[in-house]
Amino acid sequence: MNLRKLNCASPVLILALIAQTALAQTPTPVAATSPMGWNSWDSYGLTITEDQFRDNAKVLAEKLKSFGWNYAVIDEGWFFFNPEDRPTPDKLRYAIDAFGRYVPVPARFPSAASPHHENGSPTPATPMKFEATIYDDTSFKPLADWVHSLGLKFGIHIVRGIPRASVERNLPIANSAFHAQDAADTSDACPWDPTNWGVKDNPAGQAWYDSLLTQYASWGVDLIKVDCIASHPYKPDEIRMVRRAIDSATAKTGRPMVLSLSPGPTPIENAAEVAALAQMWRISDDVWDIWPPSGKPFPQSLSSQFANTAAWAQFSKPGNWPDADMLPIGELRPSPGSGEPRTTRLTPTEQRTMLTLWAMARSPLILGANLTLLDDPTLKLLTNPDLLRIDQTATRSGQVLHSGNIVAWTAALPADSPDGAIALALFNTGDSQVVVDSSFEAYDIDASTYRVKDVWSGKNLGKLKSIQDLDLEPHSSVLWLLKK
Image (cartoon, rainbow, N blue to C red; front, side, top):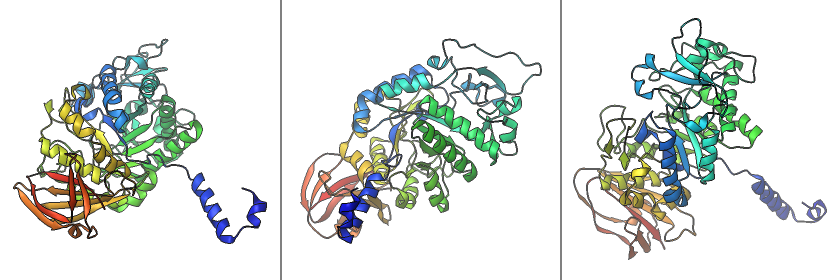
């Protein structure tokens, strides 16, 4: 900035230049748009291997990346030798490093082992309750490098806390004078996870998370999904420790990392707190391929997500994305995280409704299907450019009507958006057909004549002043783009 010239300028010009400079210096937030990608849980559960992951990542890169689907995430259990024994935790065997951190099992992820890797560690004199093998130089970095070579981003899942196997051995915490027992809170355990203890909110606990996130940054991790931390129980102290550790690792490496919190429902009264700490957080418990409410907290049904997304839509913005959970569509096999191997139980109509609701809510779009079995109808659903444009570019959205079984959402799109500046979605959540006759004003849309495009059919419907005789089958939706 030329100060001599500024001294001669008008105050208005000076303020404008200062504002322009400040805007130019404002960093782009991590996850400026809602993350899109694939996660292994819905098709592989705890069991995924490197070959299976690579096969799915190749399809992601070849068929979906150009549409914005770019995260490839390995979900829970990559450090188990024997994930099939998860129902009997006493039989589990873990892979850890000398600093007590989980590492990928080389037998399942061969690229993780260094060429000079020594398999195993000496048998301790005293038998250990938690059976673990300590590895040196074992890492996800080779696999992450390969993912990056495809133009994709790499993510992993962890459960909050510190491994019980590491606490039992009281292993040192990297880059600190602390040991695992200094950090562990053995009175605090995830109710459904037998692998970890909680972490104390003290210097040792922070050193533990610093060690962990430094390791992940060195591997090339772009997204870290932390489980048993957003709900039952909500653990804000540990979220803050993870946040500080990510910020520290990013400052040292220059590698930004998306923080995704799980499971839900995240308490909505804590929306401001989680928004300051994370980029994604779950708004419900696990969503699976069922339509009607199950009557239980788990699994969450598609129909129950209408209320959840409506409550959370106001909090969506660049860098903050309430997460309606993964998309359990397509082929959920060979070993889904819940239930038997199967083709999704959602009908084609319900799958389209799910994608419509997720896009209108601007939720992250994380696919659970086995991509190696991706069929043409599912691929067509996932690559609809207008649908994805709504999810990725809408500046605000929300539910504007809920009358009986009819739910309506609108989303505002950038003024230069092709085909429409307003998205309108109508849903029939009931079990009988309904006919919609209404004005656009009923959905808080200005009275006017609009050029209308049907997103799912791709057809231009001409100029309309209202909605007339629109048939909505049970569990169905329509998605229109409106432009004056």
